[in-house]
Image (cartoon, one colour):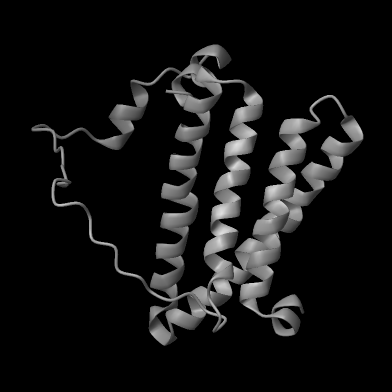
Amino acid sequence: HLLERFGARRVLLASLGLAVVRWLLIGTFVAEPVILILAQALHAATFGAFHAGAIHLTHHYFTGRLQGRGQALFGSLVYGAGGAVGSLGSGFLWSIAEPQATFVASSLVAALGFTIAWLEDDGFADVVRMDPHPDVHPVVLIPPTQLQTTRARALLPAEVPFSDASHNVSR
């Protein structure tokens, strides 16, 4: 078992380091199918190792009855908010620059994660408080009317052309 042998921190470091390599390979060797297959195979290693290490750390910080909440928070932040920010950012970058820039940016984000994980010596991440800038204020928009989800979904088209979908994601 990798977590028992190397510890969660090292598994996360390996995952993030391989992610840097993966994104650079995809962006640089787009015309080399063998390298692209190898790079895509790294996805299994990076995703699996990251998920296993992160869930292990989540169980470390959220013990007992709080483990379910910890996993929900992890899923919401990493795969929900993180996925949304990553999709929006990469879509925007793809629309204004060459595709290679998107993959280089992705590798830099993975390198930043690697650097942050590397700086910790105790094997677990330290909690760092980061207060928002005083000029940043939350905004909540609540429409004055209610609409049932089933009725709202009925208003959506059954299919969306690929060009429209890719354009919307890139905004």
